Length: 154
Image (cartoon, rainbow, N blue to C red; front, side, top):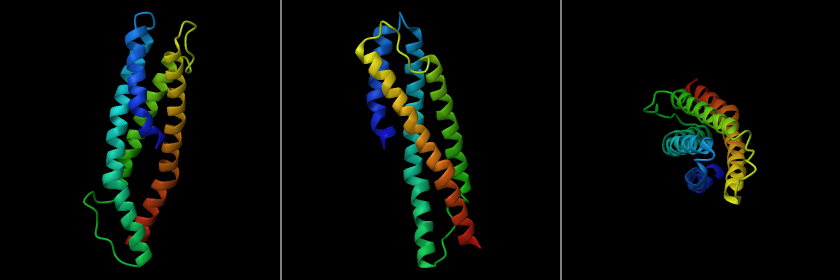
């Protein structure tokens, strides 16, 4: 996904711009810190989704298609990891909101170099993709998974 693919580049750019321009623009140091925290959290988040939640959702879909029972997951109910994912989505949203505020809605200062401008542009793209990721999961995938689990347990 765009979120995963853009993390290494944005890590590099935010750190570089903070290092070069941090004295004149201290907000950039805080933006780099916020992004690093966000990047670490998102990497962990995506790993948990891919190794725990998504495989279980796939198992539920297969069980429904084949008309068979599904053994209970080690996490009790799909609602438990979903609740955790939603809390992590909220935290990611808070960090992006902080970055947006610090960057004055991704508006580079007048003396910004090209890398600074590209960094803000890439951060804005990252935010849009993150919102899409969160929307699809919170409003489509997760409610569907909960409903499917309830149907399979009926």
